[in-house]
Structure formats: C-alpha cells, structure tokens
Image (cartoon, rainbow, N blue to C red; front, top):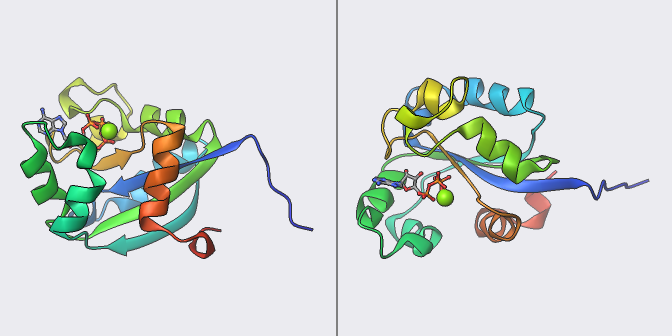
Length: 144
Ligand code: ATP
Ligand code: MG
C-alpha cells in the first residue's frame, strides 16, 4: 500500500560549490539527518549562468546579485530535496544565519561557511518557495 504522511514537508537544499570542492557533502548531510531531515532526492549539477539568474531572480535588484550568480555557477553543486516535519524551518535552523560570522554554534554555516558568499548551503525560505524551487530542479519521478 502506498502511504503518504501529510504532516511532512519538503524543502529544496543546495550544497554550494565550496561544499563540493572541500568534500564536506557527507558531513553536511549528517547534520541534516541528525536534525530529523531525510534526503528524498539528490543529484550533482553544474548550474549555468542563465539558470542561476532564473533561480535567484528574486534577488535581481540586490547589489550582490552578479556575485551570487557567478558563484553558484562556478562549479558543481549538489541539489537535494529534504523531507521531514517542518522541513523548511528545520533546514534553516540547521544552516544558521546567512553570514557565517553571525551563525549560531553548531550550525552548518558556523562550522563550514567561509564568507557570506561562500556560505556552503542554500535552503528555501518558505513552503511555497520550496515547492517552486523543488520543481525548478526535480521532476516528480526523481523524488523518492
Ligand atoms: P539562501 O537563500 O542561500 O538559503 P539566505 O536565505 O540566508 O540564504 P538570502 O538573503 O536569501 O540569504 O541571500 C541569498 C544568498 O545571497 C545568500 O546565501 C548569500 O550567499 C548571498 N548574499 C546575501 N547577502 C549578501 C551580501 N550582503 N553580500 C554577498 N552575498 C550575499
Ligand atoms: Mg534565501
């Protein structure tokens, strides 16, 4: 029988180029799993400059937009779907503040972040943006 737990939520996570380059994707996944998040889809992709601009369109007017798009398309990343109760909030708690210098002890960005640009992970910021971001990278049959 196929069952589906309605309480579970999904969110889109990206392990950014600095994470892949330093071979810390396993350590980061361990943090997510310890926080009660399951990886239900995962693949390595090299985001093109054009895809980066579409993915980050909401930040188009921000002064760091160009740097952000250059960075996320600078090398391979791991895109993944995380699932669990309150997955969006749980993932953002596990990531920590955008600026690694301001991130709380024990968070991924505190432990692994290099700078506000090379901050190791991306996570969707709300339930509706999570759905849109998951659809940007994954088709239904790619998600467990
Ligand atoms: P993310 O969306 O990556 O999960 P976030 O929600 O904490 O992170 P946003 O405000 O959505 O942060 O910014 C998106 C990304 O843009 C950040 O992860 C960071 O890499 C980059 N960024 C944000 N602020 C700055 C800044 N002042 N200078 C350079 N890069 C920045
Ligand atoms: Mg954000």
